[in-house]
Length: 96
Image (cartoon, rainbow, N blue to C red; front, side, top):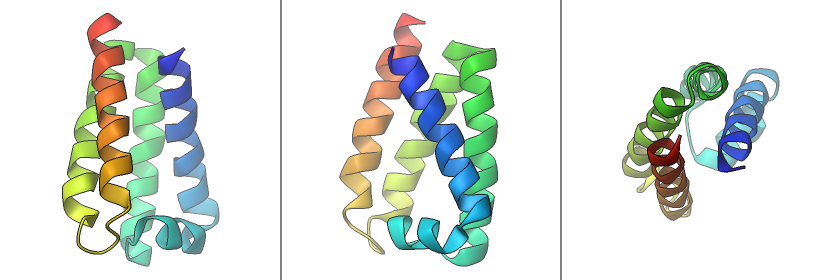
């Protein structure tokens, strides 16, 4: 269940960042070009979650920890959300 939520969320954020980067920028505090890079990363991680769940979920957890550290100053609300996501992804990776 967690795997599917994480995979769908990753794919959804990836598509959002490519199709509507301004919305992604408002949600995350990222710069516009940075948002596109994060969108591509999220698409790749989303595919990875379905292709190789343990590896993909571990990638999601590491990416979310990085996002928490990266965006903590720019948009503080992102940090706790990213850390919860990282914890869920790590838990799911351990059980995959």
